[in-house]
Each structure stands twice: as C-alpha cells, then as structure tokens.
Length: 192
Image (tube, rainbow, N blue to C red; front, top):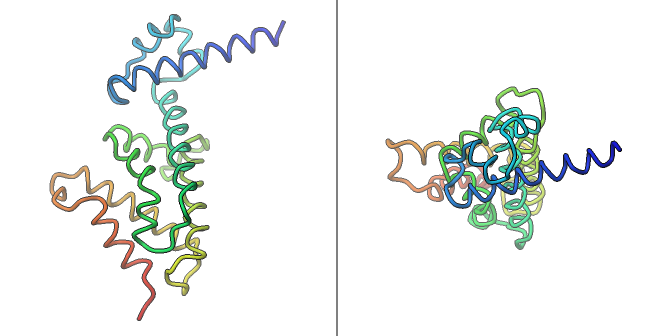
C-alpha cells in the first residue's frame, strides 16, 4: 500500500513541476503564480503546499534542473583553454542566470553563499560550476602561480559581479561579456 501512495505522490509532484514549466515557458519565471500551477496541474492548492513549502522551493528545483542542463551543455563543448573560450563555454550558464532579474536574484539567494544551511539543487549547481571551471583551468593557458581552485573561485565571483552590474542602470553601457572578459583577462593572465 505504501508504494502505491509513494508512486502517486511522485506522479503528483512531477505533474506540478511539469505544469509550472509550462507556465514559465509562456510567461517567464517571475510571472509564475501558485494558482496557475495548481489550475494547470488540476490539483488543489493544498496539494501544492504538501509538495513545496512555497513558490521559491518549486523554483529552486526548476532552476536547478535548468542550470544543470546548461552545465551539461557547457561541459559538452571542447575544453576551453583561453579566457575567451572559457567565457564562450559558460555562455549557456550565464545566459540562463541573466535571463530574468528574478532568476538571478533567486539563484544568488540559493547559491549557498548566503548562509542557507540546507544544500539544495542550486547550491549543488554552483559547486558543479566551480568544479567544471577548475577542471578547465588545470589545462588552460592561464596563470599557474595560484591553485586552479582559487582561480575558479575568482571566475565565479567575477561572473556574478558582472551579472550584478548588468542589472544596474548605472553600469549598463558595458556588456556582460565585455566586462567579464576584462575581469577574467586581468585575473587569469600570467604575469609577463
């Protein structure tokens, strides 16, 4: 009997996520409302809250899945060896992170950098991003006077800073890619 309930519970959860993905595809992440999700999924609002503590908990799962797909895409590219090819390889990840201000804000909130005790899908993706960049930097044409781990932390930090400035009206004249290129060139280029 328990397996039947668990199977039904998993199906309902999957139906809620699928309904939310449909709503997001039409209207974007920020526009998603719990009422739309439950209506599309054909369940009661209480059912939604039996599966997710709030809308952000659902978003964390959905954005974690999307971020993982973007990381899969980044890893499938030829291993980058220069600043410009590193930026190009990370474009799917950065593009999603900047797709909406709401997406960026939620990703940063759940990245693990803000002291959330529970490690969720977004924090796991941020760790994966870091590990992928470490792997790339070990063979890349970058400075070797500091460990690849420290360089990767800088890549991630500079990317987040460049994204933050993209959403700032005072700094919108410089594109994200140009700003990140300047940061990473200064950070990763070996001393002459």
